[in-house]
Each structure stands twice: as structure tokens, then as C-alpha cells.
Length: 112
Length: 110
Image 1 (cartoon, each protein chain N blue to C red):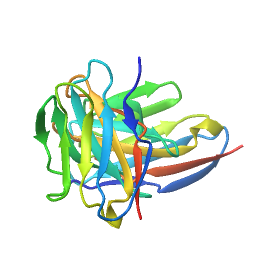
Image 2: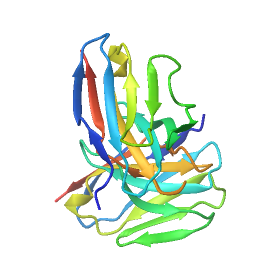
Image 3: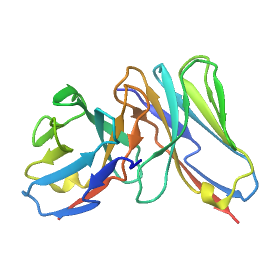
């Protein structure tokens, strides 16, 4: 069984560009969560999605950030007009029910 | 928002020693989880606790869900070099987002 997959693993963007981070949940999992981790800190919740629906986006910045989980295909976290402060590791987790979350390897975003 | 504080922040121990770390919260949780994160990787679930007072083991790992529902501890017995990493506690109130602690960085000296 493949685990949660994220790509790219590393992403470099210049200020003002767009970043698209992809997450494929584990097979049979319909719940997806996105977290952000700054260096030397714990993970901070951003958004929780269930197929085609955003359930909780209380941790998502109000501007420039959006997330989707379409009926077909991976979940996408999109950051428009990136700034240096967006540099972080972004982790996706998935779960079958609303219980145990399994994490992907993360995408390390560096904004120059 | 919920604040989870882990202690100690870092530990240096000799191989074979036992390790104890804990996590305290300003709020109650219904579920406590312990994750381990290796450099450049995502967190890997070690133990999940679902009931106040619950004591659960997974090999050399033992964790407890505090009676007050505001704390949890993790013990590692007879540490080995591959135990090196950052250990995070996480609390879950409702069945959606996790609140992560600040992490305990463990170094095992062979």
C-alpha cells in the first residue's frame, strides 16, 4: 500500500510567483489535511478537506492561499504571489475516517 | 488557540538509557497522539490514545493519556541509535485538525 504522496518534494519560487503543491492521499482515504511547519517548530493546521468540500479552513491565511480536493485527482494547495514568509515545509495528511491521520513526506518551499 | 508545550526541548542520552518526555496543554483534548519526525520527512505516528487515563505500549514505547485530559507522556525504554529524531505530541479535540506540540529533539549517543 502506497502511503501519502506529495510532490514536488522541493520547490523554489521567486517572490510574486505561484506555488502549487500536490497531495495524493492513501488509497481509500477521502479526508485530506494540510499543515505548515516552520523551522524548529511544530506543524500548524491549515485546512481540512473531504472530497470536493472544504470542511475547516480556520488555519488558512485569508489571502493568497487556497486548497481544493477534486473528485478525481490529488488535493492541491495553491499559494499565489508568494512572499519570503511563505518559505516552509508543507505537509499533507490523509485519513479514512475522521481519526488517525497519516502524513506525507512534505514539500519544502523556498521563496527567493 | 490551543498551546501545547513539550519538555524537555532537547535530550542527549547514552544508548541503552530510558527516555521520558511530556506534553501539557492549556485545553483539554479527546485524543492524544505521539509522532516521530526524521529530518526531511513527515511525522510518523507512534502511539494514539483515545481515553483519559489510558496507558498504551508499542514495543519499547509507552504513552499515557493524562486524567485531566490536558497532558500526556511518552517513555522510550532501552534507547537505540535509530530513536534519534524529533518527537511531537498532538492533541485532537474534534475529528479534524491536530494541534502539535513544540517538539522534543532526541540525540542518542552510541
